[in-house]
Amino acid sequence: MRASEAIWALGAMSGTSLDGVDAAMVMTDGYSLSGFGPDAYRPYSADERAVIRRAFGLWPGDEGVEAAAEVVEAAHAEVLSRFSGVDVVGFHGQTLAHDPRGRGTHQAGNGALLAEVLGVPVVWDFRSTDVRMGGQGAPLAPFFHHACARFAGLEHPVAFLNLGGVGNLTWVDPRVTRPEAAGALLAFDTGPANAPLNDLMLERRGAAHDEGGALALAGTVDEGVVSGFLAHAYFHKMPPKSLDRNDFPALLPAVANLGDADAAATLVACAAAAVARGAEHFPQPVGRVLVCGGGRHNGAMMAALSARMGAPVEPVEAIGLNGDMLEAQAFAYLAVRVMRGLPTSAPATTGVAAAVGGGQISRP
Ligand SMILES: Nc1ncnc2c1ncn2[C@@H]1O[C@H](COP(=O)(O)OP(=O)(O)OP(=O)(O)O)[C@@H](O)[C@H]1O
Ligand SMILES: CC(=O)N[C@H]1[C@@H]2OC[C@@H](O2)[C@@H](O)[C@@H]1O[C@H](C)C(=O)O
Image (cartoon, rainbow, N blue to C red; front, top):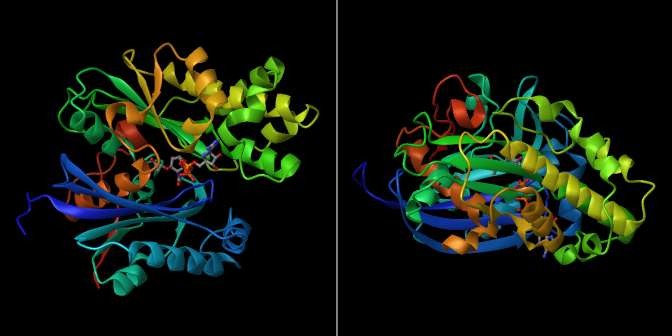
């Protein structure tokens, strides 16, 4: 295999909203994308989810972490073994805790074990090196967003917005050829996205999420709660910056006295307002905001974003991408970059001092 040859990489992501494992293949030489392959989704069972949820906020060695890691490893082994023709796997694992300037960042799941089970090299532990070198360790998808913008032939600055449990925003100038070069990217977490809304739905309606945003669409936004939320210190920090799932503990209590629909509408407005606040950091205006992640299925979220952003807000499907698989594809792409010694983050994406390639490589 020549170093410049494009290979098939399989990426896997278990996100903060804890719905399940996404897995998807991309073909790449580590620089540009040459195609997309099959994908799969493996939901966690209620019992599995409960084991992982109990380990949120915990660090290696803490009671409960090993049980969560075993669930994560077994679910990944099951879904990843469905694929064939895989040259390398990019395994993100499940973030349990993230405190880049304190205890570090913690993703459960052992890639060495998966390499044994799957019989292919596995790249994993993508975030630790970046954190050790002074970066936030997140977001890491921006280098892939850059590759996507170039793959789609975009010629002007554009934003990618991921609406998962947490939101993250990437400003991309596709005219700059290398993602680590100055002026190519600016990326950061925007704030809570679906996580507080999911928590509300579970608490009030026993549902996993607000399907289509129907409940939020029926409610009225409490603007007082939104302005209180925007007073949080996070919105006064300059990017790059990143968040843990539980960094806004006061948000849910702030809607406790509102009716269900008004509370949902207000949480959606907070998520959208956080994104709009983030967009104030863009070095140049963007022509469009391309949305990936589950939040793009929430009509209330998309409407709130359209109202608050100064550019058209569209799902990434508008440029031919799969918005449910973008993060899994990102870790496939990043795995090939790690294998080839290329950087996966830069000062403008994680705040790391200089461009760095994270990730351990485990061979079977
Ligand atoms: N049909 C839908 N209607 C409304 N919301 C939806 C729908 N489908 C997914 N979502 C929301 O999207 C969430 C899942 O998004 P996604 O899979 O992108 O998150 P994640 O990858 O776990 O999170 P992160 O990117 O923060 O790691 C669900 O928990 C739900 O809140
Ligand atoms: C520490 C961690 O796992 N962060 C996740 C989380 O989910 C969304 C946002 O917060 C983003 O920073 C990141 O994931 C994406 C895939 C990233 O690194 O780009």
